[in-house]
Amino acid sequence: MDKATVLFLNRINANFYQQVSTSFSETRANPWEGWKKAMDEIEAFEPDFIPHTVIDFACGNLRFEKFLLDRIEHQNLMSFHTLDNCTDLVSLGSQKVSHHNVDIVAKLADGTLPGLLKKLPEAELTVSFGFFHHVPSFKLRKELLAHSIDATKAQGYIVISLWQFMGNEKLAAKALDSTRTALPHLVEQGLSLSQFEENDWFLGWQESGALRYCHHFVDEEVHALVDSVSHLAMLIADFKADGKDGTLNRYLILRKLPESKVTSA
Image (cartoon, rainbow, N blue to C red; front, side):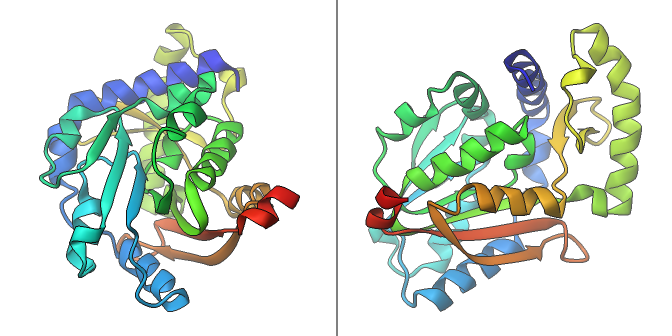
């Protein structure tokens, strides 16, 4: 996928969240079951784990930050660095965090994300929930995962969720319908179908008419993502959670390898 297509799809998503930020946030008030399971997995691996510094890519309305502060007893030991470009969502949060108003996809596309991350303290826990499916192209998704590991301390943890919405009959039907309807109009606006990648779709939101680009993760791509960073981090958990049937999201938990191993890899 070329850069022009990446930025085209990214603009669609930016417009989507500007248009529906309030109604979208109202449907996202409770913690995801997958978050609880992810923290259980980490604490089973490392009892009494306290992430002194947390980095959250695409933090939304700071729901994960609230969840973690409620869960971990020593709240005063934790600090958060959140990245997102939808300030309408972030402003709805109540927790004090160091927020960075950043268009993550644009910075991935122009190669400037690593420079920004170097300005942040390394994290014991780096997360990204409900975002990887908005990153256009397998290339940039691989890069985001690698950058997430780079932003994490040696032997720290990286947790990401990957949306597998085409496994849900209702969402799959919506994706098929929305994509079929949207493509002719988007092609008129400059979208090149030759640049579209397999399992790329468009989804609407309620009756707003707003549209978002979403990528569905098949198992083969999940494995390829893990393989692409195997020299940087070890996969310690891989599970599905969320949604009525508990299979809507695929979660990956990785632990960054000791620096000596990364250097020698």
